[in-house]
Image (cartoon, rainbow, N blue to C red; front, side, top):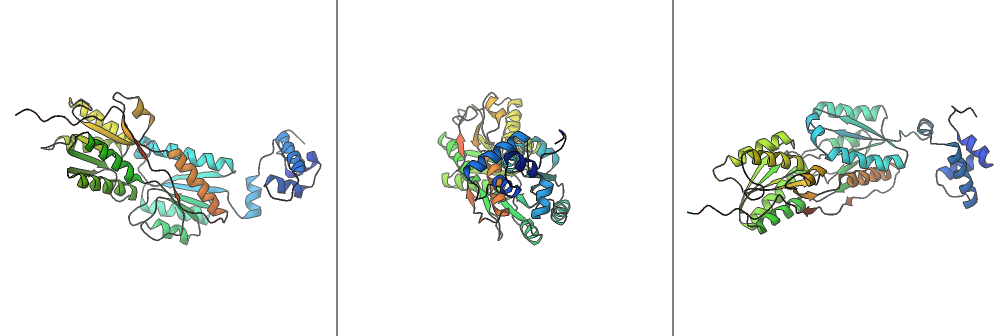
Length: 344
């Protein structure tokens, strides 16, 4: 066999001294192969450097062996948000282990997003998709189902869905942050939230409102696009209020870090004058001074679980909803007791 030729199943069969059919069964982990034959076949495949021929598999099975992820956010937000690189890494962890590839696309408008899904389905480029950033009125679920694609949703949609969901209770994390601040004596707390049209942003904002109402304290919510720039602008507006908050709960870490910068440029001490919490537990937040109190999430694990759930659904298994562990609050240096009111 020439050195430049790609080893085939026939080459593995010759090396192992068995039939091509037996090699196919062994490499696809099917029953009917003795332990000795399976070991010999796998050793021969390893020696030859055999890898699956995705094109051949696609032709024989009618599958693309690819999964799609369409991100419908501003490219500036994606560039700054550490969630998606970690989430995508988790998808790749699961896909690479099973010979799948990820088809990634960014849509900057609803119309473009719809066209991307149609193209993925019509051109048979993917077997299924992972739907992120669910919306309050999310027509993507019906669209993807009508296109004949399998899907997994991040979170449970409000509309009926035939697809399995992988969920994290975002609201619980925000609730833990508010409870922590209330225990420190804060009575004016604000929440810099994400877009109200995104379900996970709304759930976090609703959890904030519920927690401050239960504590009987003031609570202000400002919606943003999740970007650091809008997080900074929201912080400035809150600090300009007649009765500014003594603590701000941010819906992600990079908005929290932007808010911390705004506060310090105004001469405020964190946490002596203003306490700040984030969401996601990015590495930079751990290294700053003060280190950021935040809600810890594992985006990489979320991506891997979503990818495995999608693969199960594509294979025809009865993929079920998956509830990931509730996020926990990680208390660091950016939160402290509420400042005492000035003496009369």
